[in-house]
Length: 286
Image 1 (cartoon, helix red, strand yellow):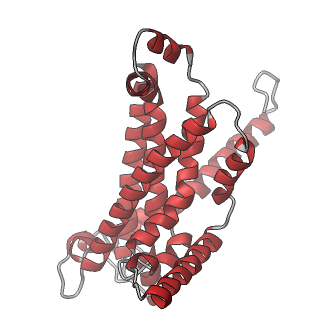
Image 2 (tube, rainbow, N blue to C red):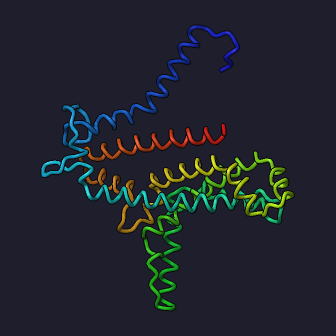
Image 3 (cartoon, rainbow, N blue to C red):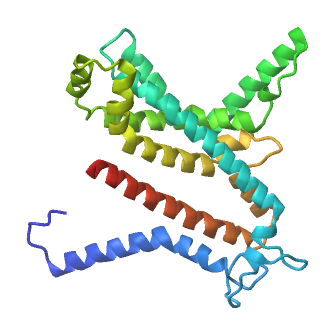
């Protein structure tokens, strides 16, 4: 749409209607889910039967709210731990990869770069199955040859971390690389000429410049890990993450506690996104 060209009334009306319907389609399910979290009903759906906080604070015996539901609380904590380690490893490895690919041309740079991006185009289901089969094959090999049982090679917490890290680190690599391309390398050269070491240049010049990208990619990596389902489904052990736990509840039939969980996730992720946006804006303005 070219705003400088004259527009008919019907065109403007249709355009505004399209924008309205688009955002209704986008946000209506989220709004309904949030409303149903406070519905005084034993079923996670309409009709509305009155306002209630039972699905957050009820301690039983007829109803158990989220804050007294050990299964959901445990899965939330597992997801937080998983997301922390995945985001930390992804930021560290992704940043080092960005530094690597910003170096002068070296043999195999382009093939290695495309190889680093490949996890983003591989379906999560295929990635999860591949990692599971590889880990199981290695586990059987070590057990049969040297009698060594390696818990890490069975579906477990750390296998989930490895599986999510394998593709989320690529996203961090792209974000940091895009920020690094805007960096004025003459600042590094000036610092080196003034006697700074390479480590001091990275610490006091390069990293502060990359800080918005590091915070932003780290926050998005945390959220990507927290909500990941496809890859995690094949690698999870006895400690289930929140998306897997919610899937099991929906499959087997659940109470509106899933709406309460969804409400808290929507609110917390929105707050995290706003805080990250504010911090990134301050860093860029500063």
